Image (tube, rainbow, N blue to C red; front, side):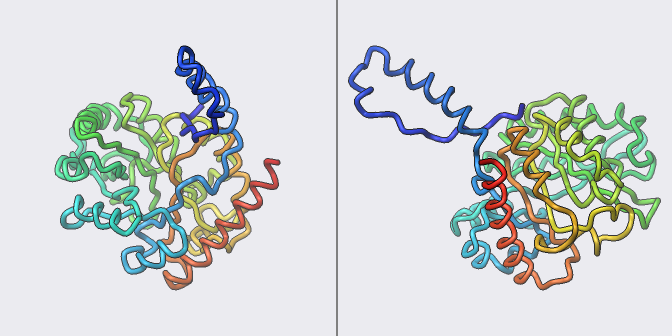
Length: 308
């Protein structure tokens, strides 16, 4: 099971008179009742943020007004100041998207400067890995990548930073592809890296593109404790291998029902952030943010009904 964040529960004040056993009672009550309560945790309690592909920096006031918890960004300038700026607006910078390149004998891009700039910020590094030597999902690259990723994770741990592999697929350029293409690749590597601050992301659109729609429940279960972040968007069912126009849409569009995925995440105990993917959507950024937020609220209502 994925670790849950327990919510506070009400403890009758009269209990506080019995100081001899107050501590043990509170510990038992919070762990027992909190774990039961965690099973009924609303989707609304899950932080929902806008990815950098939604142009969030141009609509920070709108994000806050609608209720988004924050946004993700890319390395640019002073990232510490970026995070502090988000915090001053009541928002959070949940992740920073970056990339490393896997060569025959080394991994270029140790992200050392980025890691240092994000020290103690609670911002996750979203890491994609490209290669023109190893083919997509080729396990032969593991022997080169894993030691480098372990060193990266150790440096990140010393700065209180977490790293989540970001599975990404791209078909148009065979010489410049993403080596970590599927969530299966990311989980395989995370298990080998074997560091508590090194995990994975489930990206709905990329999972659909590679044709793994039917496998999603099992893929989420296998990710387990390694699942740090999730990204979603509207999409059509049965559209794997077609195009982003059908696989990345506003959250209120498409024939794919997101509810079973959200329900599976709840069953697994996932309570981490969920990001809105907005790459290339056929809507203005502001319109997409508004419509997708309303759709998110409706999913919350449906989840409440399903889980009664």
